[in-house]
Image (cartoon, rainbow, N blue to C red; front, top):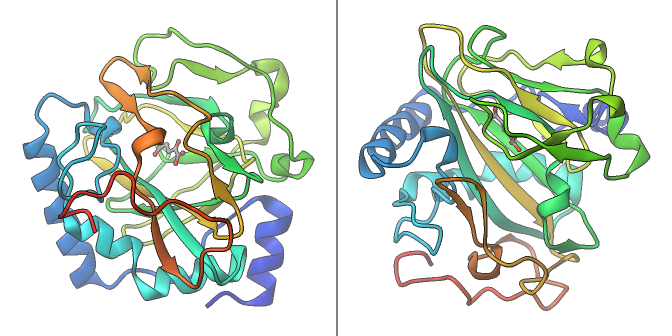
Length: 268
Ligand SMILES: O=C(O)CCC(=O)C(=O)O
């Protein structure tokens, strides 16, 4: 799916926007599924629609939709992911970050890896745009090349009003002038490395900005359910990795991962 130049660019820069774009019909199905999920979870801010691929609803309290699980299992998406992390792939997370028009939260600069129970730490995030994602609507921004040190940079508490995380990268850890905006049309799917600092500004536009962040790990890595107890990222945003269902979406498991925990009858 990816050319060798694209794969090299991903390793060099820490992120990539593949040429592939979801077909329009599939995009429409996902946009409808998003409307359904928003309506089914009226008390949840749409930036915090965690585990939307679990149609039965999981321990994180969100009523999800099967269209998101279908997206996570999509052959074209997995072909791209396999080029980056290898042929044995486990799906372990899928979250919608939806910013309402003129209201969506800021997602402060951060590295995700500090919360992730994957050892050795290896994962990649595919962020599928469901709407236009621009500077004005609060697109993702990244720091090209910062992933190369393979280290967790210092974070500090964040209590700023309108911030969608309770921690952020310490400003001494990066040069904001080096940031690149990932502006994309619906259906495109930028990918970022686990060590890539990223975030997004609030939505200042009159249009919604939604994306689906799908997280995959290579099956040689182990998802250790004992590492982190359930926690609130900010009020109303509960994460429960101990009971998160895993799906082997391609190849074979090579690390004794647990594919039973968290699966209700509809989650399978
Ligand atoms: O969608 C956004 O604005 C933030 C996404 C994000 O933080 C992530 O994919 O880890």
